[in-house]
Image (cartoon, rainbow, N blue to C red; front, side, top):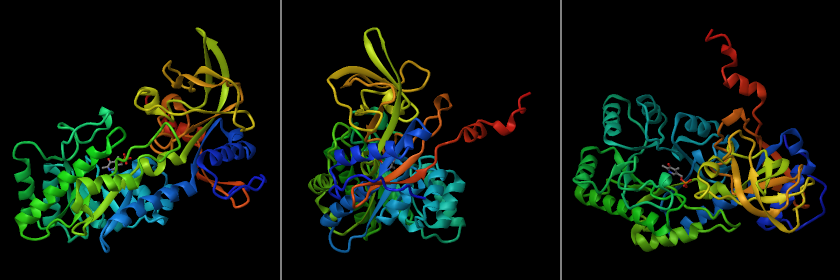
Length: 454
Ligand SMILES: *Cc1c(COP(=O)(O)O)cnc(C)c1O
């Protein structure tokens, strides 16, 4: 089902991001998306395709002809089946890290050979299933590798490429909770611990079926040069393994994702091209065709394509500070609410009709609907003074925000709609996820077991 395009005046077919966003907000209001729920979420469909194309182009431009390159999307960034399907159609597979994410990738029709399994806590059953399906597996630790030894010895032959996840221990970025490559990170085989290199080389020499190295050394807050340094360490280890084996035992490097996103503007910065340039500078041989490449980007593919729209329910003034009480809060922007310094979000003001609100800027708190004092998307934010019935838009929320719902106060998951500009300047919406109904909420809260504890 797709809603009808709004009869808006003809405009240029490819508006800039801010203009397109204004069109989408107005169309969402005109088409009643905020009448059914006080908050809804939008995804820019053409924008997602454009991100996938820019990723593909950046690597194609650098890689020697014939180099196998598989781009996968880190499903945790936007676990929505239609998004995975769209990305698959744009040539991007899936990186999964739980049985749920694997189920979503399969529901989206992503083939096994374009799926990579990376979770740090894979059960034996999950490993067995992955090997049976033929999806790529990156082992996180020595005990997981022992499990794989047993499964490989006992089981039928598998088509799964198998690798080891390496923590290059190259250091932290500005956000500790997201820094994967610290000396004590929980992820992967540490590379710099005493004796680690020798053990890793030996692990490959002992296991002919181990053919890959994996690292995911970047994230929001990690500078490009530091991410690239992690990849360099892993490339050097691959060279060492292959030299020790006397042949190309490792044929593929999975370099993870981790490209940061600019939450302060509509810029795509850094670009995929800039990341490729940083990689070429740090690891000149990476693209020479000796290794196939796998990537696992999440945030940089989806963040800037997502937009939360929420009604302002009330406005008030307390202790001299204006506060706008809206329907977007901790349930959709969990990280921003709990760690506002690390995850600042822009807030854009629109009036009740979805037109950009104008007026002199006034420092306001923008609060969410949850019952705790810290449920604020922004404090003392300079915005035209908001009024009840207005709409706020929260851009850059396509990854890890509304797709990572937090069920506080039994606030329902809102609907998600993809939007596309029509050639005549209208906006067409297509539902990508229904709103969670109150009946869903009751069921998920054990409604069928009402008397269980009597
Ligand atoms: C989260 C994750 C990614 C994606 O990270 P982004 O910062 O969203 O690009 C890729 N690989 C692994 C193993 C991850 O855990």
